[in-house]
Length: 406
Image (cartoon, rainbow, N blue to C red; front, top):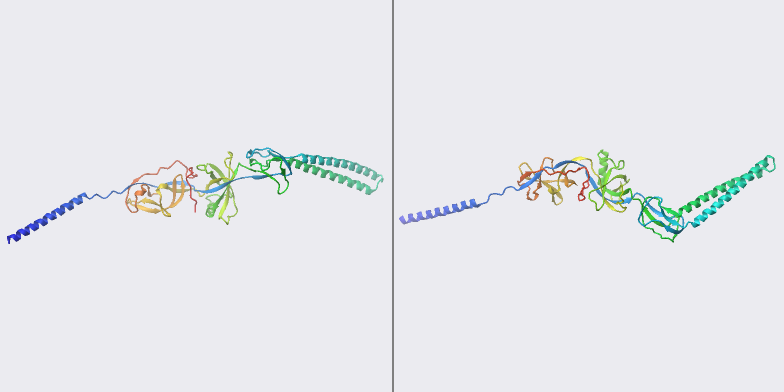
């Protein structure tokens, strides 16, 4: 009986020893378990509120305001060329000389005909004067007096006809000297000395071409939505119509940063192109340095909205989720919210937020990669530095491309 009690006591002791060991191990495990991580630190900012003007960008083509095909007005052999290919010439400068000798001879001939007509007129006037005196004494018949009067009138008409022929001959002689009809840059000579020139017809010989340089046009195509938008702005009094006002336009060549050249719209077409669904506009730009060359492509910006208060955030704070653009907002509980936003143009490195964000909300400006929707963060509030620029003017950086308003 005592043996049974001893065995039972040993079993109870062994069980207590095992239980104590397990409790000790569990306690050690609880002491070694790491504490949960603190919420990640992020920098949050409020959007910048600025008055802006949206600018729409198009691709345009430079064209000269005047373009002339220089053709001969008289026929003959080309005697001399008086310009250098590609130079800038002024209106009235001599370009070509066609052999003038046949036309000088024609001038001499018709001048002689004019002198002969004057002599005949003097004789006819004398005959008519004598006829009038003789008619008073009834020495000649009335019929003969009328004949002499008609002869005088015919002689007068002959003088006028000969004078017209002299003017025409002198014009043809003048046309042998081909001068520049406009100021501009001339092309190469298309005909060299010694060649026969055909002139005065629809198929007259093309000698060269001239295009004006200052000022210069730029033609561009606006899509249908933009055209309708401009019409609504004009009807609402927010932006004058380009048909009635010289709305400002800014231009940049392919190798220029920003939009350093200023001009204005002077023409909008009267209908949309049914093939492309676009409306043609034209702007005028000064070109005193002759850098703008007809045929070049150029980037054109024109005012696409009225002035209004906009919310601006740095471009790097905006994320992309397939076709959606989003931004992370930190609420009052320091939890991250996922916001789908509607974007406006990019101005001076800041993106306009049209919908999805309020002016008094805090968005994650730095540390976006550490944020997760619904999880808490440790926000550090910091205002975004605002550049000293006018947000109502086109951006000065050529890398910034505004979005067209839809």
